[in-house]
Length: 161
Image (cartoon, rainbow, N blue to C red):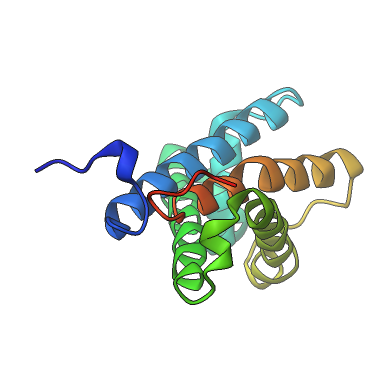
């Protein structure tokens, strides 16, 4: 029997996490392509920069294989973000009942952890601080990544209040 789209959430955890991962990865990836693309950066270069977290500068001479590694890493991070919200929401009921409140806050927390813990621990050559990049990161995390993580973790019979 196929999962019912109207009953996503607690009743089908693996399906909810998988679909949430797809939505988060797609939203964040499209944001990066549009935002950095408007600044002349190609999608290949964007995903090579993600791969540089593991490969360092060598990712930029790795052509398409490095970009594909970047896509895989991007999806893996999205899965971690969605899965973390889902698992924590199993313990803290308010997270799955008040997704409009906790989703954006979680998105900001995810951005903070990525920016101040994960990226500094990686091999990424960090770009200098610029307000447009920071604001874009905060907005996509607060308006899409966190809320999507929360939505796919909500109680199935809950409106997303």
